[in-house]
Length: 187
Image (tube, rainbow, N blue to C red; front, top):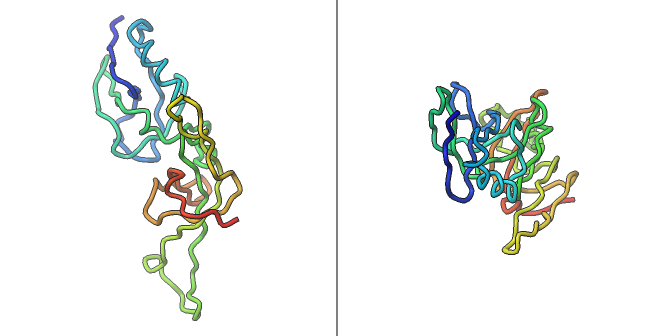
Protein backbone atom coordinates (compact mmCIF):
# COMPACT_ATOMS: atom_id res chain seq x y z
CA UNK A 1 0.00 0.00 0.00
CA UNK A 2 1.36 3.45 -0.84
CA UNK A 3 1.78 6.34 1.55
CA UNK A 4 2.16 10.09 1.45
CA UNK A 5 5.04 11.84 3.19
CA UNK A 6 3.87 14.95 5.02
CA UNK A 7 6.61 17.29 6.17
CA UNK A 8 6.81 20.37 8.32
CA UNK A 9 5.93 21.15 11.89
CA UNK A 10 2.31 21.55 12.82
CA UNK A 11 0.72 19.52 10.03
CA UNK A 12 -2.17 17.10 10.52
CA UNK A 13 -4.15 15.14 7.93
CA UNK A 14 -7.90 15.17 8.43
CA UNK A 15 -10.56 13.49 6.29
CA UNK A 16 -13.78 15.29 5.43
CA UNK A 17 -17.00 14.51 3.58
CA UNK A 18 -18.39 16.11 0.42
CA UNK A 19 -20.59 18.68 2.18
CA UNK A 20 -17.76 21.21 2.34
CA UNK A 21 -16.04 23.00 5.19
CA UNK A 22 -18.12 24.21 8.11
CA UNK A 23 -17.06 25.06 11.70
CA UNK A 24 -19.44 22.50 13.17
CA UNK A 25 -18.26 19.72 10.85
CA UNK A 26 -16.56 16.76 12.56
CA UNK A 27 -13.92 14.71 10.81
CA UNK A 28 -11.92 11.62 11.57
CA UNK A 29 -8.21 12.16 12.09
CA UNK A 30 -6.29 9.95 9.69
CA UNK A 31 -2.67 8.87 9.57
CA UNK A 32 -0.94 7.52 6.45
CA UNK A 33 -0.81 3.74 6.22
CA UNK A 34 2.98 3.57 6.36
CA UNK A 35 4.10 4.32 9.92
CA UNK A 36 7.60 4.85 8.60
CA UNK A 37 6.67 7.91 6.56
CA UNK A 38 4.23 9.41 9.07
CA UNK A 39 5.90 8.69 12.41
CA UNK A 40 7.48 12.16 12.73
CA UNK A 41 4.09 13.72 11.98
CA UNK A 42 2.40 11.72 14.73
CA UNK A 43 5.09 12.46 17.30
CA UNK A 44 5.05 16.18 16.59
CA UNK A 45 1.27 16.29 16.67
CA UNK A 46 1.17 14.46 20.01
CA UNK A 47 3.19 17.20 21.70
CA UNK A 48 0.66 19.92 20.89
CA UNK A 49 -2.61 18.29 19.86
CA UNK A 50 -4.15 15.32 21.64
CA UNK A 51 -6.55 13.79 19.08
CA UNK A 52 -5.86 10.15 18.34
CA UNK A 53 -6.46 8.33 15.08
CA UNK A 54 -10.22 8.01 14.60
CA UNK A 55 -11.10 10.95 16.88
CA UNK A 56 -13.88 13.28 15.76
CA UNK A 57 -12.49 16.82 15.57
CA UNK A 58 -13.87 20.29 14.93
CA UNK A 59 -11.70 22.65 12.93
CA UNK A 60 -11.66 26.26 11.74
CA UNK A 61 -13.96 27.08 8.84
CA UNK A 62 -11.30 27.99 6.28
CA UNK A 63 -8.56 25.68 7.55
CA UNK A 64 -6.31 23.52 5.47
CA UNK A 65 -5.78 22.43 1.91
CA UNK A 66 -7.97 19.86 0.18
CA UNK A 67 -6.17 16.86 -1.33
CA UNK A 68 -7.32 13.61 -2.88
CA UNK A 69 -5.53 10.45 -1.78
CA UNK A 70 -6.56 6.86 -2.64
CA UNK A 71 -9.77 8.18 -4.24
CA UNK A 72 -10.96 9.89 -1.06
CA UNK A 73 -10.87 13.55 -0.11
CA UNK A 74 -8.69 14.71 2.76
CA UNK A 75 -7.74 17.99 4.35
CA UNK A 76 -4.19 18.85 5.37
CA UNK A 77 -4.13 21.45 8.13
CA UNK A 78 -2.02 22.96 10.87
CA UNK A 79 -2.50 21.61 14.39
CA UNK A 80 -3.56 25.06 15.52
CA UNK A 81 -6.61 24.92 13.20
CA UNK A 82 -8.11 22.03 15.20
CA UNK A 83 -10.51 23.61 17.71
CA UNK A 84 -11.44 20.58 19.78
CA UNK A 85 -12.34 16.91 20.05
CA UNK A 86 -15.95 15.70 19.92
CA UNK A 87 -16.75 12.56 21.88
CA UNK A 88 -20.47 12.74 21.02
CA UNK A 89 -22.64 14.50 18.44
CA UNK A 90 -23.38 17.39 20.82
CA UNK A 91 -21.06 20.41 20.95
CA UNK A 92 -21.53 20.74 24.74
CA UNK A 93 -19.34 17.62 25.09
CA UNK A 94 -16.46 19.11 23.08
CA UNK A 95 -12.98 19.07 24.62
CA UNK A 96 -11.22 22.27 23.52
CA UNK A 97 -7.54 22.03 22.63
CA UNK A 98 -4.60 24.16 23.71
CA UNK A 99 -5.65 27.68 24.78
CA UNK A 100 -9.28 27.44 23.66
CA UNK A 101 -12.37 27.52 25.87
CA UNK A 102 -15.97 26.40 25.28
CA UNK A 103 -18.56 28.90 26.52
CA UNK A 104 -22.34 28.57 26.85
CA UNK A 105 -23.60 31.91 25.55
CA UNK A 106 -26.00 33.86 27.78
CA UNK A 107 -29.39 34.44 26.17
CA UNK A 108 -30.03 37.91 24.74
CA UNK A 109 -32.82 39.89 26.32
CA UNK A 110 -36.17 40.03 24.48
CA UNK A 111 -37.03 43.45 25.93
CA UNK A 112 -35.27 46.74 26.49
CA UNK A 113 -35.16 48.29 29.96
CA UNK A 114 -38.04 50.54 28.87
CA UNK A 115 -40.15 47.48 27.99
CA UNK A 116 -39.89 47.53 24.19
CA UNK A 117 -39.97 44.06 22.65
CA UNK A 118 -36.99 43.36 20.38
CA UNK A 119 -37.05 41.32 17.18
CA UNK A 120 -34.37 38.71 16.45
CA UNK A 121 -32.54 41.10 14.08
CA UNK A 122 -32.40 43.96 16.59
CA UNK A 123 -31.19 41.96 19.58
CA UNK A 124 -27.62 42.76 20.53
CA UNK A 125 -25.19 39.87 20.17
CA UNK A 126 -24.37 38.60 23.67
CA UNK A 127 -20.76 38.74 24.85
CA UNK A 128 -21.24 37.10 28.25
CA UNK A 129 -21.34 33.40 28.95
CA UNK A 130 -20.49 30.55 31.27
CA UNK A 131 -17.33 28.53 30.69
CA UNK A 132 -18.24 24.88 30.04
CA UNK A 133 -14.79 23.42 29.25
CA UNK A 134 -11.21 24.61 28.92
CA UNK A 135 -8.25 23.29 26.97
CA UNK A 136 -5.05 22.14 28.67
CA UNK A 137 -3.29 25.43 27.88
CA UNK A 138 -0.66 26.37 25.34
CA UNK A 139 2.94 25.18 25.44
CA UNK A 140 5.69 27.52 26.62
CA UNK A 141 9.19 27.63 25.13
CA UNK A 142 10.27 24.67 27.29
CA UNK A 143 7.34 22.51 26.17
CA UNK A 144 5.40 22.80 29.44
CA UNK A 145 1.66 23.50 29.52
CA UNK A 146 0.62 26.91 30.79
CA UNK A 147 -2.67 26.53 32.69
CA UNK A 148 -5.53 28.78 31.62
CA UNK A 149 -6.67 31.55 33.99
CA UNK A 150 -10.37 30.57 33.74
CA UNK A 151 -12.10 27.39 34.85
CA UNK A 152 -15.42 25.67 34.07
CA UNK A 153 -18.33 27.40 35.78
CA UNK A 154 -16.82 30.90 35.53
CA UNK A 155 -18.91 33.67 33.96
CA UNK A 156 -16.83 35.65 31.48
CA UNK A 157 -17.06 38.72 29.25
CA UNK A 158 -15.51 38.10 25.83
CA UNK A 159 -14.87 40.00 22.60
CA UNK A 160 -18.12 40.31 20.68
CA UNK A 161 -16.88 38.99 17.32
CA UNK A 162 -14.30 36.45 18.52
CA UNK A 163 -14.34 32.68 18.12
CA UNK A 164 -16.53 30.17 16.34
CA UNK A 165 -20.23 29.84 17.09
CA UNK A 166 -22.02 26.50 17.48
CA UNK A 167 -25.54 25.34 18.28
CA UNK A 168 -26.00 22.44 20.70
CA UNK A 169 -28.38 19.53 20.13
CA UNK A 170 -30.94 21.23 22.40
CA UNK A 171 -30.66 24.58 20.57
CA UNK A 172 -28.35 26.20 23.13
CA UNK A 173 -25.75 28.58 21.67
CA UNK A 174 -22.07 27.95 22.36
CA UNK A 175 -18.88 29.68 21.30
CA UNK A 176 -15.29 28.42 21.25
CA UNK A 177 -12.61 31.06 21.51
CA UNK A 178 -9.04 31.56 22.62
CA UNK A 179 -8.51 32.57 26.23
CA UNK A 180 -6.89 35.81 24.98
CA UNK A 181 -10.36 36.86 23.71
CA UNK A 182 -11.71 36.84 27.30
CA UNK A 183 -11.78 40.42 28.57
CA UNK A 184 -12.90 39.77 32.16
CA UNK A 185 -13.98 37.04 34.54
CA UNK A 186 -17.25 38.15 36.15
CA UNK A 187 -17.55 35.46 38.80
